[in-house]
Amino acid sequence: MARTGREEYRLDNLSEPISHYTDAVRFGDLLFISGCAPVDGDLNLVGGDDVAAQARKTLENIGDILEAAGASFADVLRVTVYLLDVNDRHAINPVRQEFFGDAKPASTLIGINELAIPGMKIEIEAIAGIPS
Image (cartoon, rainbow, N blue to C red):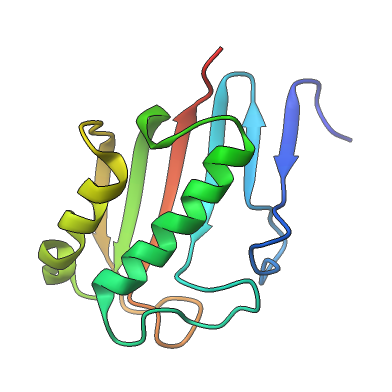
């Protein structure tokens, strides 16, 4: 049973979730965005072996979710970035700046051993505040 004030977002242009989750959940003025991957709507990896290209596609997917919820990258409060190689942060930081501009969300970077889709080098989850 859904709680009052809870709204799930599932975008048609994003790939089907590979498990039991939705693209994002809004509760009150907060939007919780699931970990986004560098994939197209058919679950094909985008960016090949280029972590910056993968980061760009991942952030484009996050941007689609933000837009569907009436928000933008300026409204993102926190991101968690998962990288197979933490040294790739130097390659993805300029891409992050392209999307966030002057907005600087709270951020955590976590180096991990493996991601859900073969070839993925990055996954990003976010929390945004929905403007009134």
